[in-house]
Image 1 (cartoon, rainbow, N blue to C red):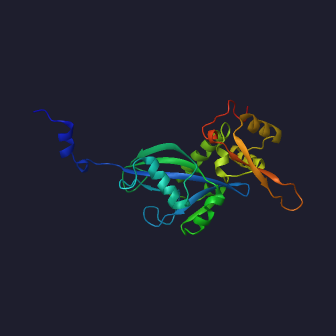
Image 2 (spheres, one colour; image 1 turned 90 degrees about the vertical axis):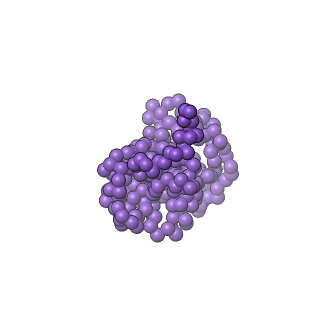
Image 3 (cartoon, one colour; image 1 turned 180 degrees about the vertical axis):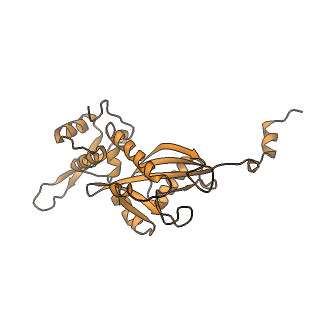
Length: 240
């Protein structure tokens, strides 16, 4: 009698085969006080104990039904919120990056609003927002410096043709705040008129009210992203 797949699975034991470690790492960025920050956590255990590292961890088969579940679970553990923008960056697998053994790591980049998670992050002793410019000069764990640089470059490229800078801001923001975040991500100034024209023509934001002025200035108009903004790509890069 020919063996069926059900028969095969009944006797199959995956522990009979060597398997690599499967983990996720996340380069989480935010925009605050005109600068770009990345979230780092201090490792409390070996390997690389006491070094700063990107948040991440092992896939938990009892909690995660997909690798996306894993990264969102780890992001929420470190920030207290679900990141509104998460994108898979790359997958790294070899026998040298982790001294515990052969490992496969799926790497993500994410953007969150500083104001939405700062109070939560402040209560986690081993987590801190670090200026990106400082983080890439630190002696961080594993290959996390290279991961941060790759994630930073991805965000720069995405900012040239999409609305992803808005996900580093609170749900309600002003256009000057959006422009400032965009300029930090692309690492160059842009003309106010061309920026405003680009945003208005795309029709991706909606007005939600007036923000009281500080001092003698005029009130600022607040906006939020429309539902279709997440998947929208401009026809031309900002540089063009």
